[in-house]
Amino acid sequence: MIKKLSLILSLFIISATAFAQNWGGGVDDEDWSWGFNFQYISAEYKILKKDNWRAPFYEVPNSLGVSYEQAPGAQMVTNSLNAISSKPSQGFGLGFVMNRRVAENFDIRATPSLIFSDRVVTYEYLPTDPIDVGNGQTKNFQTIIDKKVQATMFEFPLGLKVKSNRMNNFRAYWLGGAKYSIDIASKKKFFDEGETPINKLLKNKRNYLSYETGIGFDLYFEYFKMSPEIKVAYSTDDLLQHDNTAFANPIDKLKLRQLTFSLIFQ
Image (cartoon, rainbow, N blue to C red):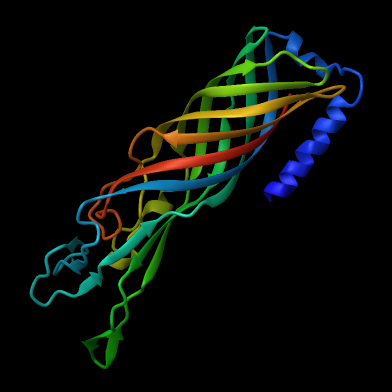
């Protein structure tokens, strides 16, 4: 995937710089300019664990909650943990671009976007032998459990764009700023009331702030400007909803790291 993107970018840069200087639709001559973008996203969590994160959980009698202490007759929900991890998950987004030119080499830019990006936390447990629960039935324990957080986000990034001088049909820039994100997904995706302890969901807060930075290139064509851009973003606060489940309790803080590759057209 990275090799393909690099090849495509190289072809665009060559085609944009090999000929006489293009007009670019006059975008850089306007105080305000508008456009749209397409985004490819890779997201993962940075997980900070509690001191007792390896501890097993047991059922609470006459309840759907969990406890570190085993009550008489209570069955184990999960065995001791070996690891908690989060692998990068892919997503996509699309949005608008609002750009305010404040000087020759400085812009203020907002890119409100709709993002579809799931995230996954993987729990790895010590192997556990099945137990007899009566009536000829046994209870098996999973060694690996993936908890997916399905997110449909509206994001509003606002940043400062610092641009180099234009060289023919090419200009490089750096971007830094912050963004506000809110999850607009259906509440049904987070509803787990009445579920057994092992089927409880891992939930995130609905809104949060992040800071982000990135680099990009303005490539000028006859009637428009295209900007390939790559950004990294880190949430500022803990995203986890700390409810009493076997999946939330071992985690102290859950922060989001997001890599975004964008193609911006203005």
